[in-house]
Image 1 (tube, one colour):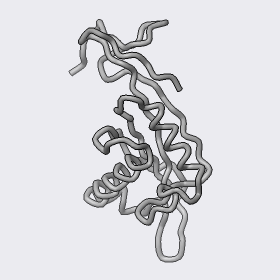
Image 2 (cartoon, one colour; image 1 turned 180 degrees about the vertical axis):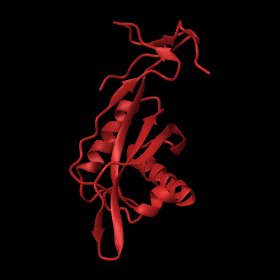
Image 3 (cartoon, one colour; image 1 turned 60 degrees about the vertical axis):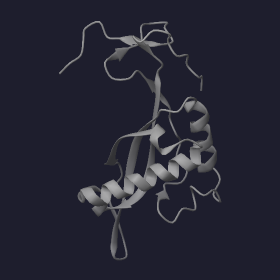
Length: 151
């Protein structure tokens, strides 16, 4: 994964690396806003430790259900996806650290008591421009969209 250059003018920005991580969770994580907020905060702390970045460098874009519900004894488990962007100086290196932890069954990420990671998943990086910016064909930096900002 390449590290993309930062533009030198204020009207340019480097592309951002986003991805998603699948986890097992209970229904209340999606239904209870307070429980969801606590769950996401713990996920961010756990991911930051795994990737070697500050928690403030992980921008959560959303948490949504992606799998079929299944019952296990007295609880109802779901597969959910956390969509996030890595805002660190070298997001590609952070993502490589995350991928290494996902393949190591004894890593702190995979043995966490607080979050249960879905095993055997592939992390797919998605480079995109920040909001209201575009990347022209062949360019390595994003520039302000000439069409302006939508309200």
